[in-house]
Image (cartoon, rainbow, N blue to C red; front, side, top):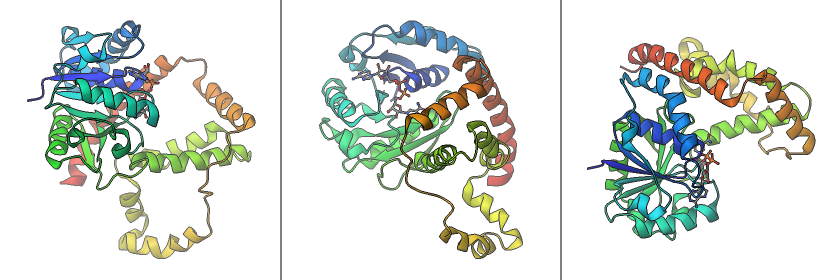
Length: 312
Ligand SMILES: NC(=O)c1ccc[n+]([C@@H]2O[C@H](COP(=O)([O-])OP(=O)(O)OC[C@H]3O[C@@H](n4cnc5c(N)ncnc54)[C@H](O)[C@@H]3O)[C@@H](O)[C@H]2O)c1
């Protein structure tokens, strides 16, 4: 049975997992190569607590279930489920997974939050690869229910199913990806949009604010209830996707998009950085995060009502 969770690497994503797991009454033991992060994590738990309690109808987040240690071995020795969240880099992760494999219990499950690295590669030096996989979440992990579960070539299905069950027990909706691929699913889609946005800014057609509004007031409003495919089915009128493909299929050949990323030149970086700074209007990342968190809680409560109608 999964009782104790080890969170390895406690930056943005690791801290998010800590909060989600604590909110679901798991014991959490955390480790980061930077031993001074404990205070920051506690501050973030306190900031996010009201939103998490509201979303999951909890009275309190029990900090007694949280422990921060300064040795990887100590973090792993009793852990039933290990969620790794170190910097996104093949060399760092492969080395770390080798150590995690050494110190983990024989029956522990090991999952990585990687945003797009191949599990077969990052676990190539890990003992017991049958029990390893990717569990790619979305920021903020404590509020977003999505997690992409990706097996490596040596992962055994029974452990993938165990991870799936665990993620469901912390109120997530796992998607089991059929085969490992770089970037998995959501980040491939996000990156296409991101790449195209950078081209548009580079060529001076719009500001970061214009591009954000283009999503916020159009596709983004629909996307939290329906993804691209079901949305386009409705765009085809009463014949649905069939008419949609007949009408807009030829536009795929024009083509509207550039596909290859632009060079991140100094000019482009400074346009993107100054554009988003203007959009932040002097508010700190923590202040904007709290506005986003309150919105995400209310949005999910509203969405539940419509999801039930749509998906039954
Ligand atoms: N930021 C996002 O939106 C997001 C979303 C989904 C997944 N991810 C993935 O989550 C992982 C972490 O991303 P993040 O945004 O939290 O990064 P981050 O920079 O905020 O945190 C990374 C942490 O890992 C620690 N670290 C580095 N090497 C380590 C090691 N060998 N042992 C222990 N700790 C180590 C660092 O000290 C740092 O605290 C990455 O794989 C990333 O791709 C990020």
